[in-house]
Length: 264
Image: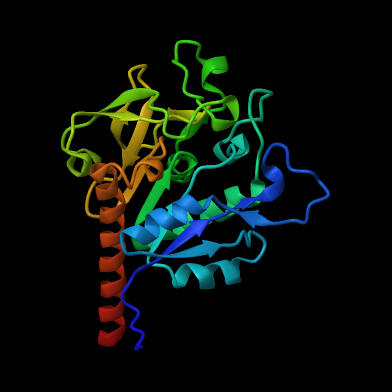
């Protein structure tokens, strides 16, 4: 079989095993991530690449980044509030400083070079912080007017539990991909966007006013959603459109980079 590197390579960030609740400290240090994210990228034509948390080795991290055509930032534990200028409150959950540093660095590089980025749940929050926004450390503690958003599987809820609807902003990339005015979503987060970064536009809002998706204007694919669309990709063609558009943008980035290399 002749191999041709035509499918875009998608970097998926990982999480430190011991940042997860219930992991015995005696287990070896490991980087992990739910395989459903990798399957979601593969189903629409991407080649997933598991990105290790080399937060203390930026030259190696940069070499990995250079080989990627797109960045997918999955869900996971809370971001350290110090990344957006706040002290850690008791209501904040588990932290993974190495993951924070790696994801923020990858996002900053991708912004500079207009490399496609898709953020899911925590991924939206990382993108917002990278662009200068802030987060609520715990929605219900800090703002009791917010509805329940923390429908976690470890609390007995299925990952595909449709918790509430979001209203999509007309004219945004997300609205054009999902082809609806409203969409029912799952909800597995207790943090959320507090101040939206100035250079992002809100593309979906929950009934309580919480920004549930945001994106950059223009032709740079930079989209984050607060829910978990990877759960519905098999059953919902609209969610598949989101992943497909991301992979399409990564493919165009790959081709443009190749053409630039040939021209040079």
